[in-house]
Length: 408
Ligand SMILES: Cc1ncc(COP(=O)(O)O)c(C=O)c1O
Image (cartoon, rainbow, N blue to C red):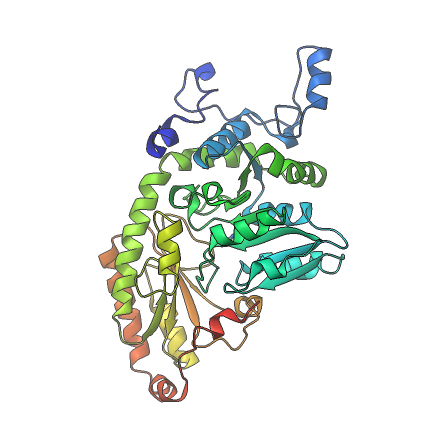
């Protein structure tokens, strides 16, 4: 079955019961059983494997988990309360005193914050690596997980996923990947060797900017410890959230195609604008990660990062405030375009506080790309008149690609 067909027909097993095209929304804390035998059996089952108690999910949760596993071409899926809780569940399930976890540089800021403030103080040795690192030489006998995010948040660096997986698997180490950017529509994570694929379904999968949800996919064996961790820590997704995400999932393929087309149009247009130093978007032929992107992804939806030519804080503020179709806020993957200027907090997460020029992330929504370019043109006009920018342009050299990779 093609992905487009699967998205429409998966996750409707319980719909027939309600004589509806949509599966019913089942909310409950208490699950009731027909017999003592059924009750005893449920208590003995694997966590999240069937109705047991509200925390392990209802039929609505199971429908979404099944659909996501099918979409990701793997056996199973665990839904959690947010993308971040999916990430922390995967990391925590592999952490512990004496264990070593390799984490790719440039990961989503809060991933690094969790490693630095929760894992390291409790005895896990977390080591960040750059995209050109020799993974094999970094693996130790105590390495329990390699965690990557591709492309990296903000810097948009690509990772050679098959090479990372081959090296890790050679030592029997599983590889987890935050695959939120590509979604299973554009990034077939498990086919490339990823054992544990993580999605902030908050973004494209739901697509409507009205909920938070995490989805983790993989084989039953690869996800066994993660399920146990989620059960023990009470990390679970609400049925309402799963139901809404199922609704979003139906249109995922169509939305992704449109996001991709518009993001490319806007990114290419931005590349040619004065005042724009660089556009970091692997789908562009000029991007250093373009070759890797072509070999691993079947599409690119954005978001992407833009480096503005250096300018004064006032001009920068005028540019951001001058945008009217781009809402100013964090997140991405929804129907609406967003501008996300990097603040010191984001730069600290990269361990590159002096990163210049200042990066700005854009998410291209479902508006007309022409209207979005017009909006950007008007806001850029406010920056171009900046005297500071002209002088700083002469004083501040563009960062070399090496500078982009020293945040490990
Ligand atoms: C790459 C990436 N992973 C994970 C997350 C976390 O998702 P959530 O906001 O659902 O916790 C985000 C959120 O921005 C993200 O950008």
